[in-house]
Image (cartoon, rainbow, N blue to C red; front, side, top):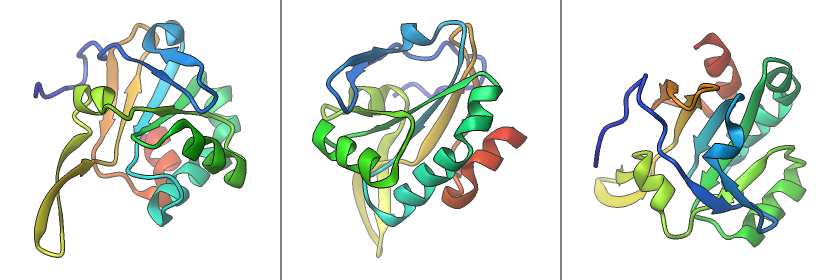
Amino acid sequence: MIELTIGDPAPKFAAPDQEGNMVSLDQFKGKKLVLYFYPKDNTPGCTAEACDLRDNYERFQSEGYEILGVSADSQKSHQNFINKYDLPFRLLSDVDKKILESYNAWGEKKMYGKSYMGILRKTYIISEDGTIENIFDNVKTKEHAQQIFEG
């Protein structure tokens, strides 16, 4: 796995959103993109993070950002999550974990002393020209928007 760093070109991707529409990185040329990876729909930390981004969505829009969430959940699960919490942004379904792997968001996790493979909570800020502008490895789920704005 190649470690991504600030200034690298963002890996290309294409995946279906909650409605089955294909979404690719190329569609965001000329815009800033918050690409956030999260473990699972409707879990406490993931819900807190999504709702924090939702509550700050107007500011993101006014500063020229689009937001995409990515997890391995199904399109149906994403649609239910969006409906339940009135999320204004799209969620991509990466069931084969290709995007997760290309963005180093799939890896070893530990819980109760056991190691297992899973989705790492991580966010990439991608600039208008498609390069990585910032990487957040230590996401504060309830204050993630503030983390992003403070850079």
